[in-house]
Length: 417
Image 1 (tube, rainbow, N blue to C red):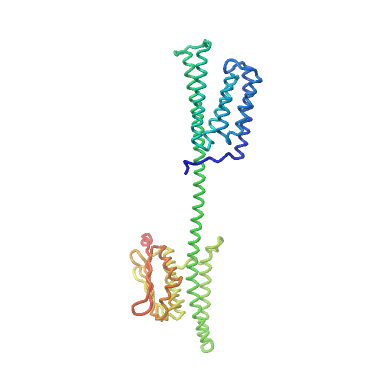
Image 2 (cartoon, rainbow, N blue to C red):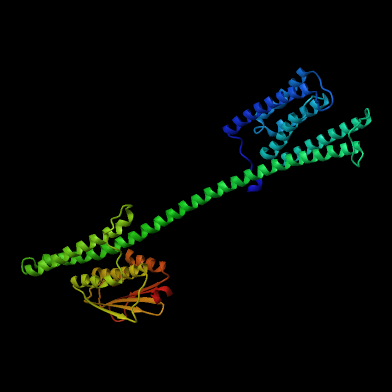
């Protein structure tokens, strides 16, 4: 993917900077030409009229205005003008060399077609060395050049040739390498921006997934709370209605149970829905756990069930998540007994095994207990247990009634607590 990356075109700010750079180069070129002519220090020993030299400055500097938009065209134009200016032996060679450097660099940094960028630069550099060779040959076959201050071990002409070659090799290799590094840096920046965007999108997807999972958990909790308490309230309200005229005291007790159950349900709903509010009140009730099971059994007894409860093994601390899941499993199982089974007695057993907490809820009903497995309740129980890596077994008992057996693994840290 990134091997075929193409650099986007320059921004408006970059285009404005190119205009400013072209103006700056133009001013520097005019100043350098005037100063060199004033000193008489011409690059080639002689130069044409000052006005002609200044006329060469403008066409070399102006193409820099569009150097990032049309890098290849700018390099070709500047290269041709550079050779033409040297042919005319203009007085200043420093600023034209800087313009050529910028043109070669820009192709390396901005040309979108990398194959064209590579070979066009190599071609221009090769032409420049041919022009350099031509100039050296012309100098060697021309009038003899004297070096009055020469004192080194090498022949001054040979030293001059080597100096010119080495300087130009460094000049063009540096222009090529800097342009390549600029393009590589731009690609790396684009990669980082792309990865940052991918990370942001991934975080958004994870957040949406977490929100969906939390909503599902809340939906299960809402189902558990509403189903259990409303079932108890319905039974007690029905009992109160039947004995309202014949036994007001019993009806009063039943209505008190309805009232208490309603308040309990409201408190649990407030605690549950509090997680949806950013400004949840600190006094909201915490999620129920194993210590709240006796109150759950009292609600079932108020609905007319006989509830026996046994704890086996050595009780120990379990995580709040495991405790909540255990509470909801018992709550859902008792709700199903009240709603679907014509049961008189339900037996709740809790076993603390070596690495698990096992729950067993068995009733003696002969009604529609089997239908409990077709609702949302048992599905919610299975999902709760699956979160902890637990298991759920449900089905009719051999003699009578229905059995719910759940196993919740407990961590080693919990066992040591």
